[in-house]
Image 1 (tube, rainbow, N blue to C red):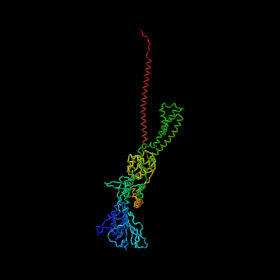
Image 2: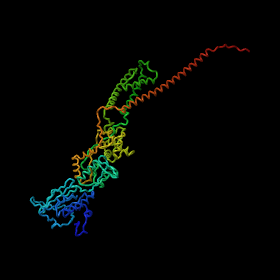
Image 3: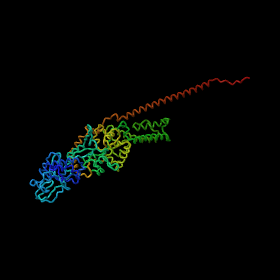
Image 4: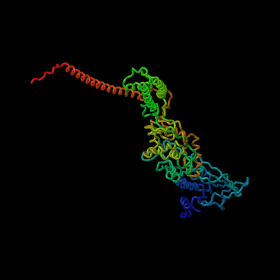
Length: 618
C-alpha cells in the first residue's frame, strides 16, 4: 500500500510516476480509495504519466478499481479536467450503504492505492434475480463530443457479483492524450511536407485522417520519417523504411499511403483500408517527333518490308525484261542499261504512291509481275490513307501501345517506378514473364542510372512528360499532379495490381479494432471524399474529344520536309546534269577539234606536189 499526499506522513508519500517505475507492467493493477476530487487528481496524474509512454510500452495497460469515499461517479465525470478513463472501473455504493466497505470497516478520508496482482478479479457468484443491489460497477467513456457513464456490473447484498461483459479492455475509451509516435513518408497528396519559417509542417489526406483519429481516440502524436525514405521491402534479409520502424518498435503506428501486401502483413497489422486504387502505366501523349507523323503511321518493320519489296520487285522485273527470249516492241527502249532500270524504278515508285507512270513492261511475264505489284500498292496506299485521315481528324491521341505485353516488345519507351515501394516487390518476386521482363529492364537501367528507381514521384512524372518514359504507379499521381504538363499525360486502359492503403499497427496489436472502427466511421461519413476533392488541383484538363480537330502544321511538317528534300534533290541532280552536260560538251568539242585537225592534215598531205625521182649525175 502506498500513501499519496498523506498530510500526517509527508515524507512517506510517493508520487504516481514512481509507482509506475517500481511495478512491472503485468502488476499495474491498482485499487484507489479516496474522495471524488482526489480521484480526479490521481487519475489526471495517471493520464499524464501514461501519455508520455508509447503505445507499445503501455500495451498491457494499467487496471484500476476506484471507490469514491465521498461524492459519486457523476461528480467525477462532470469534471472539466482531463483524466484517465481507459482501464478504470468505478465501484459506487448505493446511498443506503455508502459507508460499507468490501474491505471491512469504514473507508478513511485519505488517499491510498493498493496494488493487487489481479485487482479486477472480484469474486463472482451467481446472484439471485431478486437480490438487492449493494453497489454498481461503472465505467466512464469520454470523447471530444460527450461523456458517458455505463453500468457494466452489480454487487448484491449477499456479495454476489453480476458482470455484463469484460470489465477491462484497454483502448476502448481512447488513449487519453497519450503521445504516439507516428511514422509517415511524404507522398502528395496523401502526405504533403512543407517547411515554413524553419519548421516542418505536414498536410494532406493522411494527416487529416490522423487528426480525426487523434480527436476521436484522444491521443496526440509526433511524426517521424524513415531515414532511407523507403516504404518497406526486404533487403538483405531485413526490412527497410516504414515497415522497419514499426517492426523494431520505433514507432507506434504508420499513417501514410501504405499498400497492403502479403509480405508486409506478416510483420505488421493493417486496419481496414481507407483508400482504393489501381496500378497503371502513365506516359506522354505529346510525341516529341510528331513532325515524323507521315512515317510513324506504319511501324518501322512495315516500312522496311515495303522498301525491300520495292527493291526486289524492280530488280526482278528488270531481269525478266533483260533475259526473256520473247521480246515485243523492244526497239524503242533506251540503249543504256541504267536508263532502262531507272524507268522500271520510277514506275514502281509512282504505283506505290497511287500515281503510276507511262512505262509498261514489254513482255507478258513482266506485265504479269507488274499487275501483282499494282494489287500490293493499292492495299498499302489505302491502308496508309485511312490511317492518315484518322490520325489528322480524330481529337484523341493514340498511345504507342495499349498494355504491358506490348510495352516490353518495343524499344522506344523505357520505364521505371518508385524505389523501395510495393511495385519493386511486385515485379521482382513475380512469376509472370511480362513482369519479369519489366523488372530486368528496370534493374538494368537503374544499374547505370539510379534515378530510374528514384524515390521522388515528381521526378518520374517530369521524366514521363518530357521524354519517352513510362511511369508505373497508382492512378493518384497523375490525377493529383499539380503541373500544367499533366494534361499531356495519359493512363493506359490496362489496370493491374489493385492497391489498398491502410493504417499500420504493430503485429498482434489490441488496438486494431478501435482504429478500424473509427476509419469506417470516417469513410462512411464522407469526410475522406471531401478531403480528397479539396486537395485536387484547381486546373482540370479537358476530356479527350472524338470531334474532328484542326490539323496543325506540326502534323504535316514531314510533308513539307519531304517536298523540301525533293526540291533539294532535284537541284542537286540538276547540278550534276549541268556538270555532266558541260563535260559532255567539252568532250564533244575536243573530239570534233581532233577530228577537224585530222581532216586538215589529210587535206594538206593530199595537196602537196609529187616530184619524180631524178638520177643523180656524177
